[in-house]
Length: 151
Length: 138
Image (cartoon, rainbow over all chains, first blue to last red; front, side):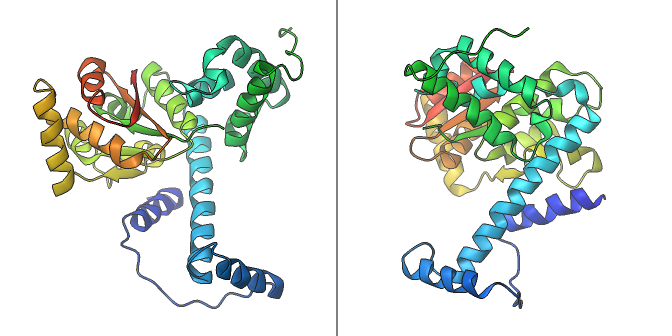
């Protein structure tokens, strides 16, 4: 079993609530610790421990998602989707303005894809997809200009 | 606002992820759906049984990574599946479990994509759900 698969197996345990708890001692910036205590008192989370665990789990899951896509496209490069395809699919069947304007999604995605050739394997791939959709929403509202057709 | 999109896969999608062929149109479509899903990616355990997808098998690595979460057919899911099958008698147990998984994964305002080769039965089942379920043909 590869390290990556072991990582996914442990994450699955976490999702099933099977993970045991252990006490740890983590050195962290004093200001971060105080900010976490104050944010907890303001209602961010039920405790600093819960906030820390949630933040770390979110980061681990985002990392896992990224590594899964990188590993998949490394093995099967033909499976690489287009940015327009992913962006259009994200809002399919919703009331988002981009769902009604596949032509604009295609134009904006093509423009962005030329500047971000690595978007599919980038750590911010989700944000790249969302930026297409936000840009299309702005265009539908009459803000900004439609990008020129791809050359 | 960009909605949260979850993904629930059926047997056909599971089989596509298990393929080791370099080119596979359906596997590429599953990956597009995975990348479009900014929420959870789930397989009902009944689908895993039908697809022969055992999490611990080395060949399941690709599928495990892309669809990391199970929706377990527990007592509550069984009861809801029965309700759905009463409404759509032609639907299979697995089909009903897919819609139940969609209902459990989706929150208010979310969209759940069901990626399937059996759109007719799943659309019929989805009509009996209050959730916004987008049934997509694989």
